[in-house]
Length: 275
Image (cartoon, rainbow, N blue to C red; front, side):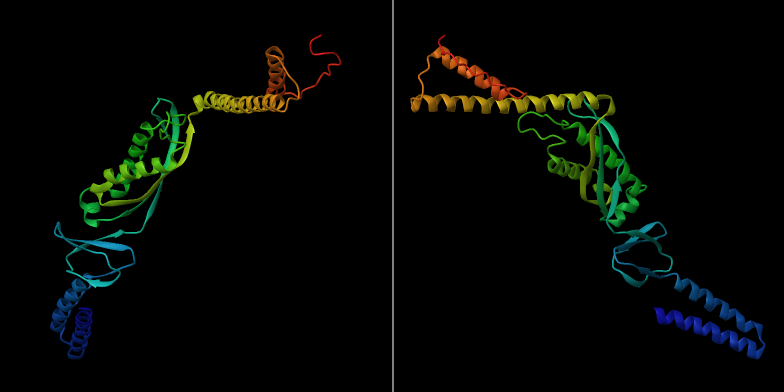
């Protein structure tokens, strides 16, 4: 069709030359008609880059989609809506929501998406890009409300501890919401997660207290094991025979030394244990 269009332009030039040579203005009429035809035919040519598609619409009716890159010709009266098929990033804003336990948190996510069905993207939603933005915010809020921030029950997935599980759930949620718009979700992950400022200090103190308790538990467990080992060794090797009262005193002293925060200052007993 390209050569036909070029031939039409060549015919226009030839007709104009003949009209000038013969000094006959009537020869310009077919030249104008041929030029109009050539211009209409030229409107049917279009090009597409890689990862770009074009939706063809003829007088309001869908006529198909071109998804390959290159130089194409279609009905000149077709309207051509070009749509990018490349992957896009949606870096969501920080949202303030309540987690599963009702604690206010700040959360944000990034969504990687692309147009899968160009016809759905054009005809089923008003603006597919704006639709992705709104539905992504709604999905993040819904997913955040289904999980606790942290400190969940045993084997419970939390927002902070189950990043992969939460990302998979968010991806599924988004794909279900965006299916009608012809959009495919490639990936969705949390980019920001924190307690809201009004409870951040209280939650920080709670986390610090939990860390101290966990450390104390480990210290006490280790100290008890060491005391038990010391008593067993003394008894098995018959280094000294201690009655229950002296064993209790020894256990008390060892636990104070092993569990104390400050450095121990031993006191040497120069007398007898039973004095």
